[in-house]
Image (cartoon, rainbow, N blue to C red; front, side, top):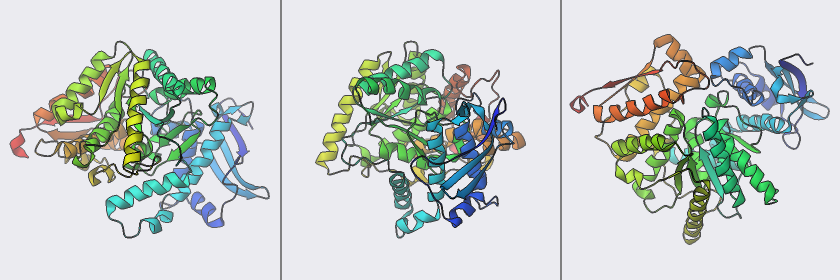
Length: 462
């Protein structure tokens, strides 16, 4: 049944997950607090809502509050019944093939995450448990290519970017694709979609028929950044911390385009990890890039990082403006270093076991008002630990902007309060103000109301 904005129909998997056990069906249909139904419905709605200009999970859920999804086992196998699904996911009443695949990727990952992982991680410390959980989820999704030399480039950047910036991300993706590099992003719109579109054209010209467009999301953000259908390998990680770890365990280098608070969070994560003493000699190409005219943006980012993490952090990245070919050539050279290093150290090509990720970057952070207010935003800590705490602050701001629990918490209790010494809070304030002025916090807002308040205090209070 099709109406102007909604479609009610049934879909079946095209190549995998043809059957489920009664126990698995029951878990997915369980609407209790411990069941998977609410999470499954939300993630499936996000997949179906691709191309939307809404980036608030709360607004998406309210817009499609009549949407429902039911699971049934027919004589031919598994079937999903979609009720009042967004019409944009269909063409002439038929679901778009990429979106169909994404629905069953969601189903696969949500069923696997949880009790199935416990046996694999028995006896490991907390950090080892988390890393092995990430490994098992990725392996279960069949994303490893053990015999392929490092060629997977992670592209980070904002979902709320202008036309010129978006076109530039496509040009960079095109140059990477011409050099036979594959693309991994957060799978949403904007700077997460552009590199895939550019690379897809280049891969077609090079007659690459097994090109990879890997998208990694997590339940808290997926409705705000619906997966784009170019993604041909979709992964749903349990939380933002495992999502970030998956990027750097699976990817071989990173390109960062202009973005907002979420992009700053990603930058702080990778730099904090690379600043750990165990990773000093580890090659990991990291390039910041944007079109002509983005010099001021990267000057702000660079100034913030130098004032907070120090000049040592700046040695781990390169800034290239307005030159997609140079970006691709520098990344190609970086991947050769990665390949040589992994051969010399007998490290796998498909999963970076050697990179050391401190536990503080792995432990899930819940951005409540209390947790945000008690973050250690003082300089009496290592650059690695400071990067972790600043990352958590930015993660909380992202939650307050677009994630349903964060948005509701802000509506009920007011803005998050971040308290720290002026030498840290001043550059953070300048960074966030630049995002607001450049309209990078949210899509299509007329006037942004900050979900945070910064308070600078003397360092002696710490």
